[in-house]
Length: 91
Image (tube, rainbow, N blue to C red; front, side):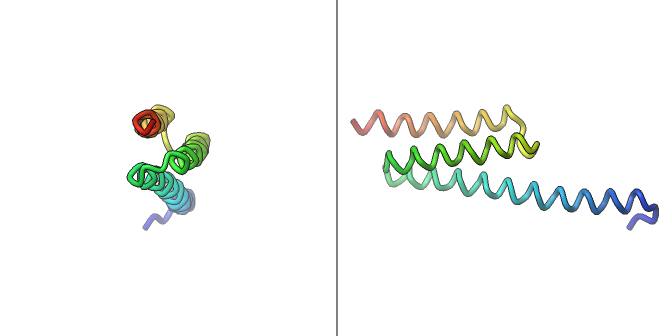
């Protein structure tokens, strides 16, 4: 444990940031799992709604600096392609 006052503060800030980052990453995973679940049930409408919810959560995480913008773009692109594949194959 640090003895210097500024180092003690940094430990507190790091812990606060860690819990905040953990919460946002968990929210992203939850939204991603909802999209994947709707893909497994082949529900196009629900998949589209869940995808837009996922976009919103990921974009907020990027704004807060939790996820890098390229990582967010990759996640959104991969799931959007799966949803598009589902909507075009079910016609």
